[in-house]
Image (cartoon, rainbow, N blue to C red; front, side, top):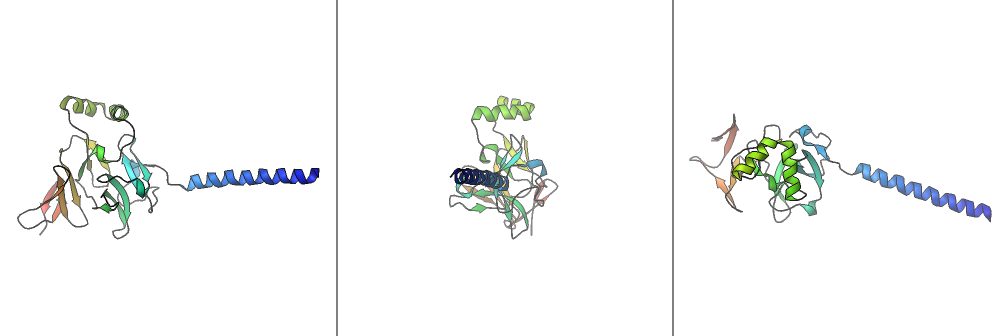
Length: 202
């Protein structure tokens, strides 16, 4: 009888250890935040291609996001199988991700699905870029981010208009409210980005 109780206790202990190891293994397999400085448009840099990420400009990391948690109008990073690279897109009301944002796209910091209170974000901004925080405080402007050629978002005094240059289509879109407007030129609606400027694509 004593032997049976001993075996039973050992079995329970082994089971508990197995559960603990299984939980640790599951946690290790979950996508983890990735330093944004390492995340270019072509490199995985630790990212899981099946995972969607949000960029937090305050800690400069990419954080995994579940599809059901995406917020319409907000910006997320995803791997585009068709183009074979990471792209930035905006979520729509149906839960789909639209656009493949290219260099020069600008978005308000508030559209990056930020977490925490306004006060916490303000303190984080003051730690990261004190001069920029002071400028925003004086001018009353809201932080904007601009996408560079490597797929990184740069915080700075950029134009206040939210815009997207869609590399997949060559189209440009601007938001002067909640509705996007297509930007056209005399020859159509296709554009190229060269040396920091947009030029008509014919």
